[in-house]
Image (cartoon, rainbow, N blue to C red):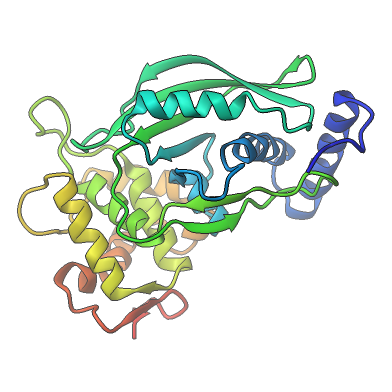
Length: 302
């Protein structure tokens, strides 16, 4: 796909701006979110030029592709299924150098060690600052958390990136972190210890928000979720059997973040959220979910 229908980069960007405003009027969302999503889409179109390439979208971006009213995010979490982050970074730079004839280009300006692999001994990460250009005009930079070493117990799930329709520029088909692994990752991130001695509890309240969103919006096969949880628990070298015990101190932090997430409506109270997630994860933790599926509509296993 190309943007040949637009006489230049300025015309393309005007079309992006106009269509973002039109979409925002219909949904009540900020036009900037649509513009940002368009830029992310062109970045990811470069990453996924080859549908079988060794890349997987993780984190909030993957959740938003699946669930339109999930927690918003302003960065991209990207897993490179390669030997290490140096190799992944080299491969990513090569992909970004390809001209897709869409009037955009992307430049990685800084590379820093990342905490994206925090609490995951087998995972290494880098935080990248990426500057997008439309023609000669620099647009708002964004962050890419690039990791290697994440565990997948299922195949990545192909899905198109939703967004505004720009003629000539089709939505890229992404490879998403498998849903069961995404859920297992969130659970284990909550239960992991942090700091030099591993004694500091998680401060990632957003992981509880995401688990509530998954419980409310996604149907899940029990045996696959059980396998993913056991696998991720072992991959992180966590002690004992898998459990769900979020820090009690989140009771004041969780409501503020949940109220900003439409999919958490009705579950913005910490106690209600933990009860729902415990109901969601409990049978997958103890193995009794085998032969059952979680129904998001019923908020129950069947």
